[in-house]
Image (cartoon, rainbow, N blue to C red; front, side, top):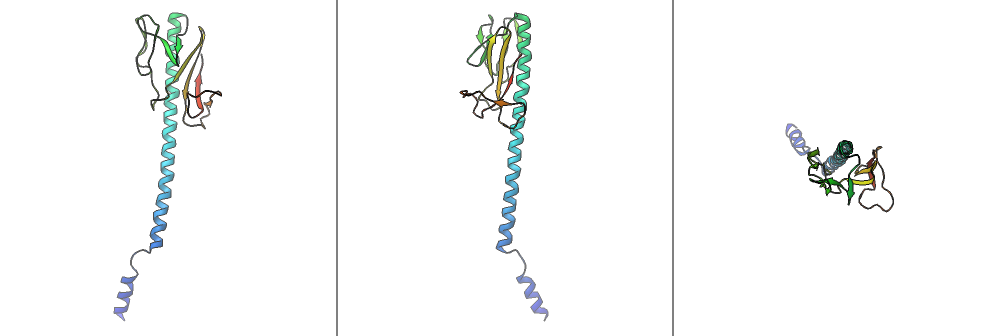
Amino acid sequence: MLINIQKRSKRNKGFTLIELLVVVSLIGILATLVLANVNSARQRGRDAQRKSDIRNITTALRLYYNDKGTYPGSSSGQIAGCGTLGTATCTWGQAFTAGSNTYMSTLPSDPLGTPNYRYTFVDSENYTLEACLENKSDDKGKATPDGTTWCSTGWMFELKP
């Protein structure tokens, strides 16, 4: 009788194939949910960086305005107010200097590289500064105007003076 109990307990050790498949599928579902949340958090983080960069650029533009009495011009979405004469096009990721004044040691560029920020000169008192956002549920964002193709997500953050 003792031999039968030992044989039976050896035979019942381990997991069935169905139990293993259920556990593996549950782990897969949990991993998918975690990765989706991590990617969403990264997008929100990059969007927060973009909004902060735009606000910092706005401060530099206001300093430029205080010195020159006008906002710098624009060229292809970039600030046209750099260089020794203040007429060269500034490059995202480079210094924003005009003459002997440095307004930003580095004009920030987008966390992902492209599309960069977009600056549009309106008149001597107005401009538009925009950043393309990844997270369409951002309450500070708005839809890009029809016909605008620079922002692939169709959702942007905009600041004006």
